[in-house]
Image (tube, rainbow, N blue to C red; front, side, top):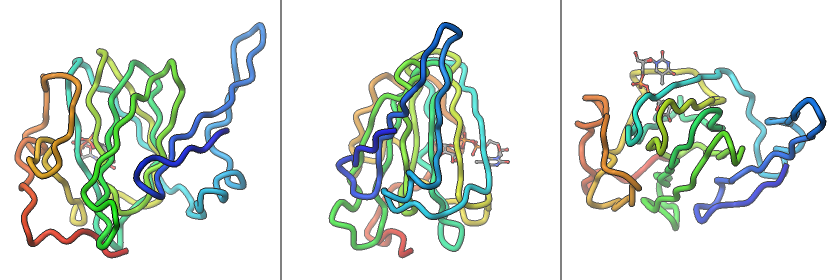
Length: 183
Ligand SMILES: Cc1cn([C@H]2C[C@H](O)[C@@H](COP(=O)(O)OP(=O)(O)O[C@H]3O[C@@H](C)C(=O)[C@@H](O)[C@H]3O)O2)c(=O)[nH]c1=O
C-alpha cells in the first residue's frame, strides 16, 4: 500500500495494492506494521458501514471531542463520494483548512483521518456505501460538528445538496469561541 500525505499534515490518502488473478482480486486494507510509517499506533475498536441512497446527499462534518477523539480510516465500497476533512487541531498551521478527494469502489482509495479532524462526504452516485474503522467508541455526549456550508470553511461541494439530516443542517456556525481541539 502507498501512503500519500494530503495538504493537511497527519492525514493520508492510502492506495492499497490489489493482487489480481483470474478469479478477481484480493487486497489488504489494513496492516498494523505498515501503518506505523504514518505514525499510527492505535487499535481499531469499532467498524461502521453506511449506505446513502441519493446522489448529492451529504453527511457531516463530524468529530468527537477528547477523551473520545478518534482516528478514522474510511473506504468507499459502493459508488463514489467526495470525501472531506477539516483540520480542527488547536494551534495547527492548517487550522480550519479543508481537503477533499474522491473515494470510490473503483479507485479503492482510503482516507486516513487523524484525531482532531472533522469528516464528511457528499455522494456523487446513488447507493454509496462507506466502511469506517474507528480508534474510539461512539460517545454521543462527545460529538461535535461543523456546518457543511459554514462561510468560514468555503468547501467546494461538487453537487447541490439533495439530502441532509436535520441535525447536520443545524450545526452551529463557527465563531471566535471555537479554538479547536487540544489533543
Ligand atoms: C456515528 C454513529 C451513529 N450511531 C447511530 C446514531 C443514529 O441513530 C444513527 C445515524 O447516526 P448519524 O446520523 O450520526 O450517522 P452519520 O451521519 O452517517 O454519521 C457518520 O458521519 C460520517 C461523516 C462520519 O465521519 C462518521 O464517523 C459518522 O459520524 O446511528 C451509532 O449507533 N454509532 C455510531 O458510531
